[in-house]
Image 1 (tube, one colour):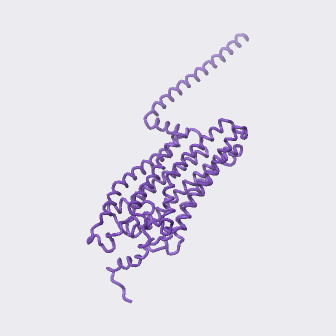
Image 2: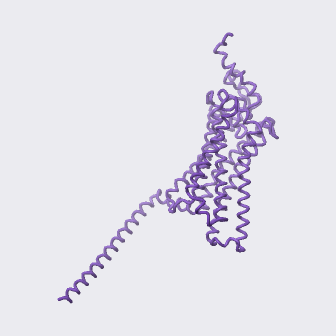
Image 3: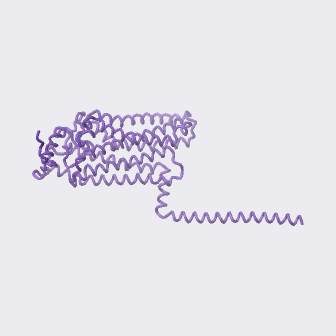
Length: 415
């Protein structure tokens, strides 16, 4: 069999994957409607009359449609705004983490989990920001060709993005268990929830979700990472994968609801003397920590619930086939979904500062140090040190004077 000329290799590659591209669109469009490359695959957010083809170079013959032009202009406005919010969220969460240096007390298990949750928020903002740049800003707005492995970039980013969602919900579940033991089993809390246990749990919560999704994407035969140039990922657009993601999202939420309902029932009974083992001050502190976690949980539900519902309900064989949703509906829903996730990561640092006295005090100390007040503190410390040395010198001199006077009196008596 004669080999085909090299000039026809791009055509062969296109024909080889034409059928899959007719049914499988760019996966990221299901959430953010921001395609990966200028048209490496037919996108669910693209107009039906796709005219730009990097393989056949048809863009030189057929100009972009009006829908494509409008979509590019929308990306030109929306993507930089969302990137700005992602950067602000990342910076605010990093400031929370840097303030740990100024925390005077030793880090409690609750504070360790909260700080790790702040890392998860920063991580989510970073992954979304990178996805916006790689999937939208470069290929769509600036027309950058991301190369033959662009779909592999999409899969990696999606594994890390979904992993970040699961990391966050696992942290919230861990905080719920932490509060549950602290309120209902206060005598066993110190022995059960140790810093070593919390460190081990945090490590597992960070490693498992990302490894799970990367392994999932690598184990499907002839799909995902096991397909040529990651060109096929039909499993992502089917119900089994969507059900798996929904289980990882909703099951921890149900468990958290059970824990918090039980906690508040027991706290209510405490007013009638059921939980007299705890002091009122300790119980008030635990309840305040629970309320803080519930506020963060609320932002998580409000931020991620629209994305998860849209993700679960819209796929090729879902109750609402995504191909039947109009282009501009998908685009605006995608912008709303991503905005809610980013705003969620932006609000959490405000909750930390407003509700956690350790973080508030650490930020105040860090601000004073970075804004020049450290010089005043050094001067005051020097003055205090000098006055303390003078006081000690005076006491030592007085002591010696008394000893000398006593010795002198004894000598006179002996004389």
